[in-house]
Image (cartoon, rainbow, N blue to C red):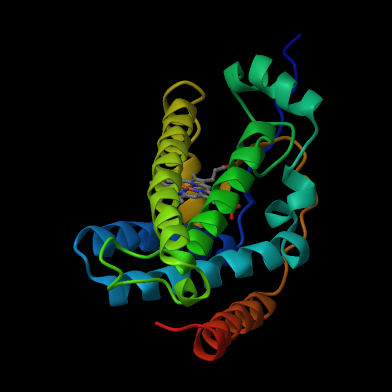
Length: 228
Ligand code: HEM
């Protein structure tokens, strides 16, 4: 007897705010690298403020956003991570849950944490001749500002390593697991076999309010407490 085949449908997994956040973040990291390399420090600082705005938004969205955006949904315990690395990584087909896999979830947290650290270090960094500095470098002495600048370089390299791993994992999904994660991050939906899990999508208006609040917060921080 032939087993009845499960229904195949398209399932929306990523909301627009997460997708916009993702591609804006990737673009801004490119801008931060380029402006830093070219010594365009005014633009470099502005890019950092924009990245911080995105990070604050994503932090809030991780608690108030859609199901697949929530930290509580994708940060799983060590057993789930180990099981995924031992089996899930090598299995094809629809995963047990939509959204980030257990290992990917932690790599998202690692990327966001490193980015927070990167912005914070830039805030206190001073260049070799003391001519260019972050908005809060006036609060620390020159040596501390230099140490912050060196750590800013180091964290960027760590970030590059994580991004490389991120892109490699996506290539693994494409080539071995035959899953197009990039398509899902662009369109928001993916193929789903079987019963679609219930997902809740938060209001895009709430996302807009949170982005504006984050931007206003960053602006006020720099305007009233920073010196740049
Ligand atoms: C500067 C470079 C990048 C950074 C910092 C970055 C960061 C991130 C972060 C933080 C997430 C989690 C999204 C969320 O839950 O809010 C994510 C997911 C994702 N990123 Fe990137 N990303 C970068 C480049 C790329 C590139 C170049 C691609 C495409 C080749 C890509 C494809 C994806 C995909 C497909 C996901 C969803 C993964 C999944 O299904 O779990 N990313 N990325």
